[in-house]
Each structure stands twice: as C-alpha cells, then as structure tokens.
Image (cartoon, rainbow over all chains, first blue to last red; front, side, top):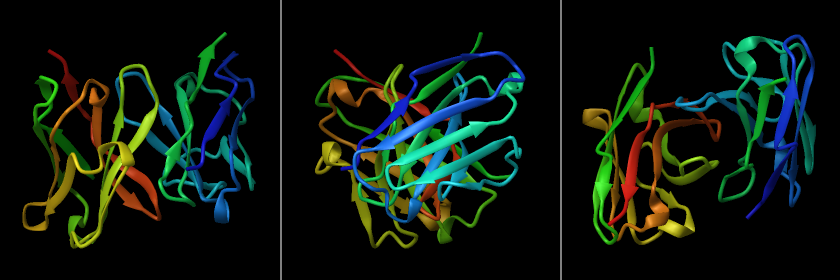
Length: 108
Length: 117
C-alpha cells in the first residue's frame, strides 16, 4: 500500500500568514488522485481538495492544492482564525486508499 | 441538506460484537457508494470498508477482513457495519461517509466504539 508522509507535523503561524503543507507518497500516485481534508477538534473531517488541485464545493479560494507523482502541497494563502485545524492528505489512486498522519496548523 | 447520522457505538469486551448503523438523508443514497472510516483516539484516519450502490461489491482493509461486514438497505437509506471478534485496536470513532469520485465528500458526526475489559 502507498504510505503518505505529511510534513511538518505541526505548523505554528499567525493569522494572515501563508501556510504550506506537504504530503509525500512512497510510490507515485496515479492520475494525481490526491485529496486534502480539514478536521477541527470533535468534528468530522471536511473535504477541501480532490484530484490534487480541484476545490470541493464551498471551499474558499485561499485553499489551493498542487503537485503530482509523489509530492503534493496544500497552500492556504492567508490564514483565517477558522483555518487552525489538522489537515490530512489521502491517496485514492491505489487500493487500499490511505491517509497521511496529519499536519496540525496552530496559532503562533 | 445532507445528513449522515451514525449510531450503535459503545463499550464492548474484547471478542465481542457490535453493529453500527448510519441513517442517510438529503442525498440519493441508492446511487452512492458508501464507506466507513475510523479514527483511533488522538490518531489519524483509516479507511475501513466500502460498498457499491447495489451492495454487489464490498471492500475491506486487511485488518478487519473476515471480522467486519458492511451492508446497506436502500429502502431504509441506511448503512451498516457488523463488527465481530472485536479487538482493543478497533477502538475508534467510526464515521459513515459518502464516496464520490473516490473521495469522501460527506461525513457523519461519528460514533465511538471502545473495546475494553
């Protein structure tokens, strides 16, 4: 199975700053089948990005995804207070689908 | 508005069984692949099982194969997960999720399963 490694584990930033989250895959992710989710404490995950760079319905354009092959990035252009959360990447190009271990974006 | 509401979680002893349910509304349930995804306390997400629209195809993560069974009742807009031979490592919040274009676009609020003596 494909192992996804997210870095950094924790990102400490201030509101208004730019956040760059990385997701590395142990093998190439076919067709850029890579998604990103946001999860806040006590809540279910929310889909942000699919197919590496397509925003899900209702997701603000400050969230963007990029990458291909084994290296993917989630960028939050300017952090809003509600963006402080844990972010997970997921690959669905190979079975079984797998998730990264998460990156926590915390207030500095 | 799409709603997925899980129920059936609780405390169970190792080796015991539990059946989770997920009631769906606000979406065309019978046209949707559905899945269960779990999250151990303080840990990341793990896909558990998926089922095709008509129930003819089912897939499981290796660690639950032969112990868990996913099923659905389209007439009741409901998804189920029968969990047998439960182990401590099955302790987690279990989420019901709709699958669209291979990603999980709608999630329930989750139900906690605790396996402990």
